[in-house]
Length: 265
Ligand SMILES: [Zn+2]
Image (tube, rainbow, N blue to C red; front, top):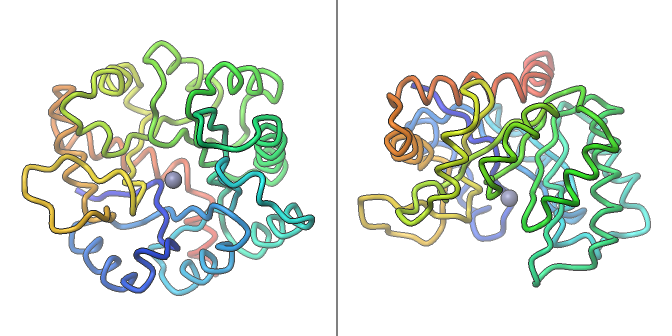
């Protein structure tokens, strides 16, 4: 069984000094590729460097909704510069209407620009949505179906909305939140999603999964992805090999342009 971590943050200062170790342990765990998402202009360069150094790291560039009010006057130019410099996706971008985050109108403006770029440059997009489902669906109706598939990371929406997103060219990504024994909503969403439309992620270094063995660290890493697949497949009653094969094939589809681009370099 092979795995692709469809959403993580390897630039994060809590883990950056240990990337060779994280990469080694991922390889041993059969995690073949890791999609590492930048979150603000300040970590675009580090994300690009990680991708240049490691064949297994696929980069995405974007402004996370938590940081939409920290953009510089040149953010659009910088984003486009990094996207055009090499094979890459767009994100992490999106909408987060939980209390801790910044101005909603600003988030919408920044997110809509990312969606426009995804269409224009034909890049996969890595989307974060929290408590903003109505606004997101409204925006999707305006922008129309994506040309290149994208994903909604660590899905927290209802099962009922899954078909709406599938029909708009979006894959649904499940994180360690699906391993929480109390998680019912996310397991229902996983039951609802088509076999051809789900992927898996760790959101490293966050969302540490609920694993049977005692944890030695608070920081998550891509090597935990097979354990997430094991628990998630059990919770929906699917054979783990079949489950993992679908997740892997689906991720290959979403990130195909980055993989091909990296191989051709
Ligand atoms: Zn993330």
